[in-house]
Length: 219
Ligand code: ADP
Ligand code: MG
Image 1 (cartoon, rainbow, N blue to C red):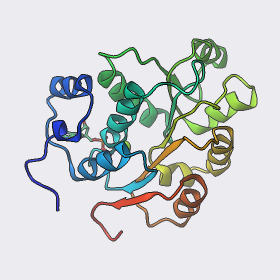
Image 2: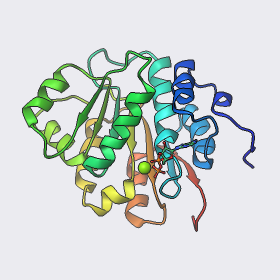
Image 3: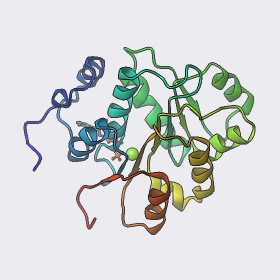
Image 4: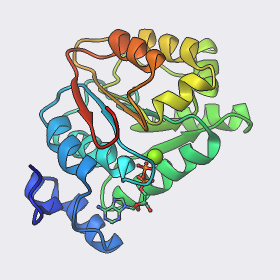
């Protein structure tokens, strides 16, 4: 059972994250946050679902940033975390929250969206961001062009995995998975529903012994 009095400070998150949350006026986790954050902090892969508006973004961003702050990079140059979202708008929303949460840290973030200037993105990627927030199609284009290397990726996060698959991004997700394939990668997959055959199949391929968290609904 979830305790009513649980607060973000009970998860052992880095104080810079707690300060950022305080600044945003957020102190009490939603149910998906209460369940996903401690599970993700143990380093497990996760497949998690809860309805739209339930706070899934913080459920993956907080443990992800905590890990980046607390652990030494596998590689000095490659991106450490990649967050994929199905559309430009959703990726931008994730980026805005990520910026707000990392303002007290030295984490660099680059946003890589379809429909934007490719060469500008190349330049931004050459600055070696720690975190990339991207739409899958454009990220795959950069892999094709060898403008980035995912060998050092420690965290792969898929937001709205059901929608990414509905939009036909299975091929790109597979390509990204293969480019970022190493033992120490943690993979977090979030979806509005887990009742989706393609999400199941993708989870089977991309996640290692995942914890399954389904809040509400028929899951
Ligand atoms: P989802 O991805 O599940 O649709 P979001 O992560 O976009 O939901 O969150 C929806 C809204 O709720 C956002 O405006 C966010 O800032 C706010 N929010 C998230 N978590 C909390 C919380 N623990 N307390 C108060 N507001 C929150
Ligand atoms: Mg969301």
